Amino acid sequence: MNNDEHLRYPTGKFSPQPAYTPDEIARNIDRIETLPSRLGSLFEKLSPKQLDTVYREGGWTARQVFHHLADSHMNAYVRFKWTLTEDTPVIKAYDEKVWAETPEVTLDPTLSINLLRPLHIKWVSLLRQLKPGDLERAFIHPETQKHVPLDRMIALYAWHGEHHLGHLAIISKK
Image (tube, rainbow, N blue to C red; front, side, top):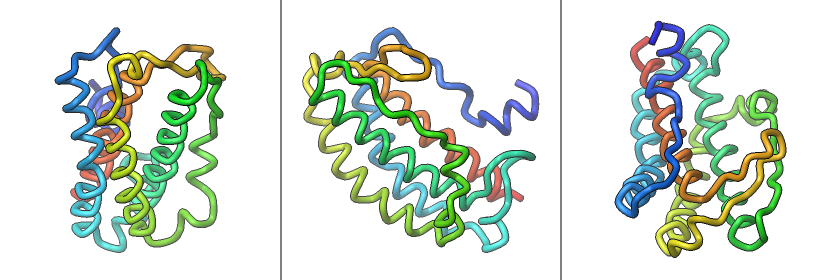
């Protein structure tokens, strides 16, 4: 992996598996569960200057990454609920790059960390109660037209948190 790839994907690209074992699902849920506290710990180590530092040229600032995680994980939670309550719904896509430019993204990142704490408590509670058949339920992404099963979504969002923790770790070393 070249340096730009390492900066863009510090934990590597997400590579979905065809299916996940119960142990893999449990470990991924654990990763989702611990994300808010890990973000809080990383936030405390960043200086005000680092909050407005990008992890790579053309990348987001630490501040934007914190707010992006809240936006993205709220959308993920809603997508789970749609998938559990509707038959193979077509989810709503959003432009995360444009969302990372909205005015509230200039505010204190603790707003998003504090939003993630109860969101993840509720989300993880839901995930831990899913039955094997629930994990096979899927939604359709409107841009790719792919069916995305919930076990893959759990793995994706476990990876997503690690991915952005990697970006914040890069900034913390600047």
